[in-house]
Length: 183
Image: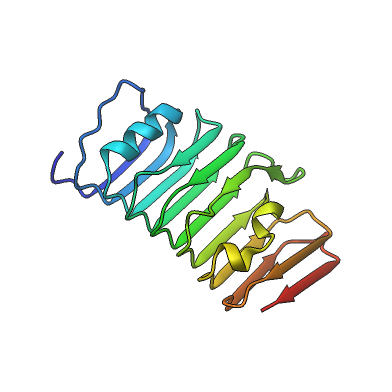
């Protein structure tokens, strides 16, 4: 496994006792995989070169904490179960994408998302998730942010202030009545 740089796993279960030795892994794509917080910690500690990390329809965790990945460039999550907290400490992170399918069609899911350590973030995507706290002072939190996409937002108002923003997409935000943008 020492030479593998890209790994895709689908429809399996990873146990905390699994030992991962992928020292050259750069891309990790997990689809419909059952894993818990300890497995995620083991993966990030054992695969320090990950640049592209994707979790699609994975379950078994409520808290998603990712650190020890200094080269992480893209983090993509499509969640079909409730996620309470996401915390990423990725100094190189440029793209964060979170799509909640858990509460699709209902009120937006609330998830505490902490990305403040990701000062190089350029692209931020939220689908069917409440991220009000993250959007407050977004320009000072993410001084290089260029793209912000929000869809399926079930709020009546939104305020965005970011001097570096180049692309703003609001899609299927039918309840929005007031949008304040300062760029």
